[in-house]
Length: 148
Image (cartoon, rainbow, N blue to C red; front, top):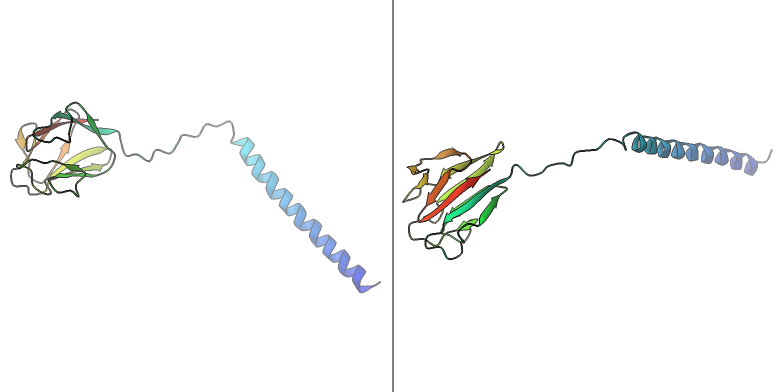
């Protein structure tokens, strides 16, 4: 036997084995797709809840419109400075006045040591407080209602 015939035979056998391995894995993947194809998968929900702030009174803030709803999908900051999520142009609002935090499918409001305070349902809060549906938040002359 010739060396070239032996090497051709060996490479032929190796090629056939590799080809069968590829076909095996392709059939395995197709089987898993067909087997699990009848099951409806729930879409992954990346949001942490459906919350919003309805503007009841916009006060002296020209940028806000009464009756509109601000969606709350992540933590938001409220204040007079431009780097806040909700900017209020009210002399009774501090630069960084308050923060609304989304945690465990609920909302928490935190007063950031503002001068004139943050009010929830008419009561001045200190630090953090959990918010419920239809709670009213007053910051300066603006009033928001929590929607959940």
